[in-house]
Length: 264
Image 1 (cartoon, one colour):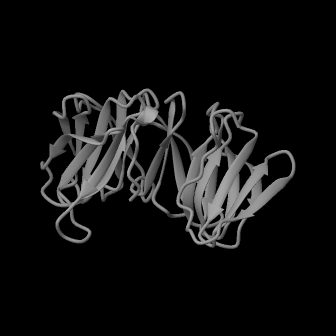
Image 2: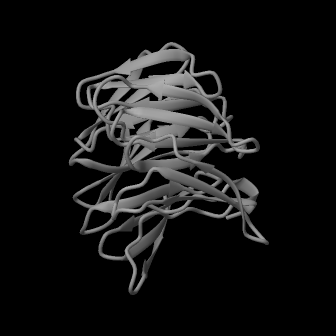
Image 3: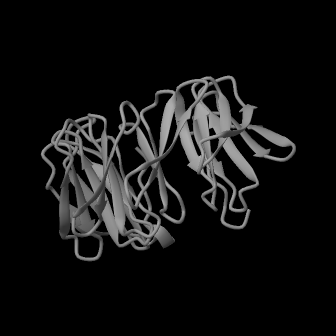
């Protein structure tokens, strides 16, 4: 699991443990010089994931054993709330773009959107086989896309919890991205294909044969005109959706994430 930096790179969150693949401590370090700010031991079992909110003020830690997500205040180190999914283990805890909300999953067919600081439940998202894998917010927080690594993804209205559209892909979904203006969704699959979808209708706008292996990373450029995709065989492609594409081979490393810079 990569160690996430707080926005503006002033803090780094780490997960450490005394047993291989097990952890119950979270550490936050202030960068230059490295100083331990807070140490937490609130988890019953190992911490499966940690994520900073986009504004850098909150940190979410996901407990693998008890299906809870803990939300922490970064400055004080105090726990703000504990989000209880209630069913099985959690697979993600994703903050909204404005940092005010957080989406979590459970082992069932249910995802939940909460107020990030108070833990107040806002909307429940329920659809068979489409909520437990991953979630992506639109930049304006109007939509959230969930999937469970099957061939189906669901676009939800975050205000009402209603289904806006259901996307059915040619193969099982491995990565999802949403355009900066929120009008298009990109899905990458385990067969190496990328499809571009209309957010409002779920209609397929483009189908691209990008890679020969499953896609591990997918992102739109800031202007929404290009996408970057990476696959498990270390190939990375930058594709202009209206024209040519460039292909790169990264030697020695598997690619887990790929993003454009803010001015690219």
